View (cartoon, rainbow, N blue to C red):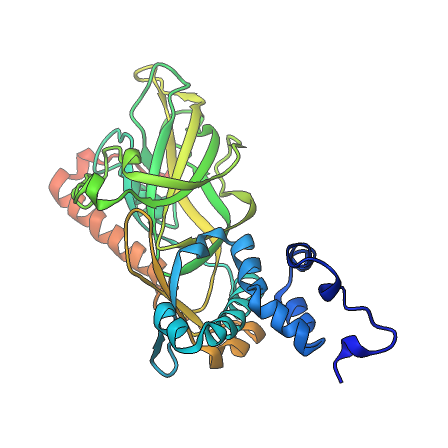
Length: 377
């Protein structure tokens, strides 16, 4: 016997208009609650699934998922095209599938035990660079502010007007990322008296993707690192403006809400300048480290295939249902190829040492740009 037939029970879903019932049920903000609701009775299960409440909840929390056009059960290789599946089953099987997949995806996005990772992949561009390539934006991906006997940082060009902003653009690593925090460290100069810190007054973040290929062609691939590229992107998320402190430390900026990003790009907007350089009287911004605190949805449970890399992106969601419980119960191993490996920091050190040796051979011993603090005397 269905629960709504019980003497003390009142099935409000049958008493109200469908739109009102959907509105009331939309206040359930946990997929586990939707699962419990669907277990009340056959009628409630039919209502939850038919109205796609699990999918609505997922898209409400992460609107970027609206670009999913297909779902694949990657465990058995079955490709369930929405159009074909609907023709064969009049929509019932596709609704059942969406209910299960979107409820599982929401759980993975919000309750995964994955440790925060740095999702920034590589540098794309900077609006200006003072001395390229020595002060390239690539240096901000080095986890330390200097290699052996050399500072590692990005520097803007000098400006007489301290209000002139700068922007840096980065490509995120492949995968499904839930970005919660972005950390920025201003650079403290080793060499002048007082060791000035060339910080921005404030910082703002944007996330998005390239504009359609019909508009930008292949210009993005050929863009030099020291030229601006902001007009080649569509920014779908803009953070509030965060004040920066004039301190040589990694400063965390927590976003007001988690932001989902799939195969995306990050823009760092540095607003205002604080430090004037004594040599030329101009204002600069120097940045040495940039990283993000982000949760990656493990590829063992979900993955995305990008169908359209630019413009209005389209994705195929690949689902591995047998791996979901393991993802939610424990932290996956760090052997995920899409996540940063601990060995990368060692690689940066080795590359830095090699770079120092090459520069030393090319420039000679009297042309060192910076010295260690211990050698200043």
